[in-house]
Image (tube, rainbow, N blue to C red; front, side, top):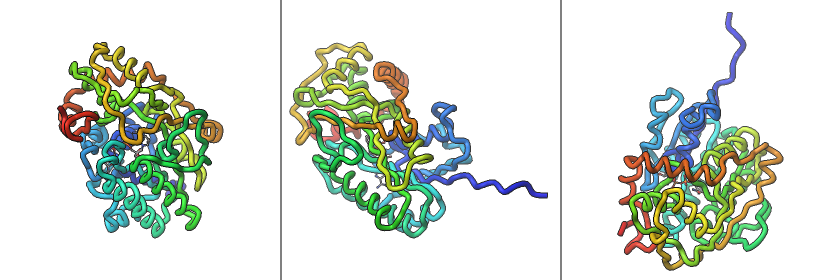
Length: 348
Ligand code: NAD
């Protein structure tokens, strides 16, 4: 006698899963972050090129799992992507060039990975029709807003080459739904922070430098405003969209913690216990967006999302993690871009 047939576990292809957010997502699904947030059923394959931002060690905690596989490769490799998409029934697409400063110096890599790479995944999805394709995007696609907040229907008006490449990818993903009926879902989130964040992004750059008693470079007048989202909450939002979102829909994921960079810097100085004299004003980034602000009522009302991590507690936990995990970040500093340094990518 055989029992009732059970559905095979979902097979997820996670691109960019060795990066900051992608690896947090994978560790969460496989129970290596909060055990309560794990999905006991899924099998996860990570496809990652391991660029300067990809850190193989980010996946050490799940490497032994029989529900995990790692493929070293490029999302622009059409044959590899085709073979992988054929074997998976869901795609969660994080892979991207993600650092705005680098896009100001060299936009070509951003167009290749963020636009052409996304289209390569969509082409394979058209051939194999995965059940779900979640595309991870950003609030930066809207440009800058002085007051109020963007809804998911606000027009795209990106300013940096990074944001322009993400906006192009978003439009291609939506075309995959409107033209071909693919089940695509887009998330656009605000600025993330948390552990395993590459030490060239503002928060980990400042924490690691302050821990070493080094100066931190604050752009312009320090009044640029961002809404800070703990990566745990971002992952929670993505999971709600993957499991309950509607085909063809865009969902904002916000943190509810808007702050000027100057005030964030003050919080970081306090959390590390560092001297305020270590803050050095540097020339503003070209085209630096003044403020981002997302209205995230849709994901709250339709999918029950609520951020759980407060900024003060989240920053304290993040500082503790960097204090206790020097062996993770010290080797990465030599490949981090630092504003105001003699040349991007070279530490003073
Ligand atoms: P990250 O730079 O830490 O990681 C990106 C990962 O993608 C790396 O592991 C890298 O090796 C991989 N990758 C790059 N090019 C690739 C290619 N051609 N083929 C395969 N893999 C490739 O980025 P992150 O901060 O984790 O961001 C993940 C996603 O979230 C990105 O799509 C980004 O645009 C989006 N996002 C990030 C933030 C944020 O605050 N960090 C905010 C909004 C949206």
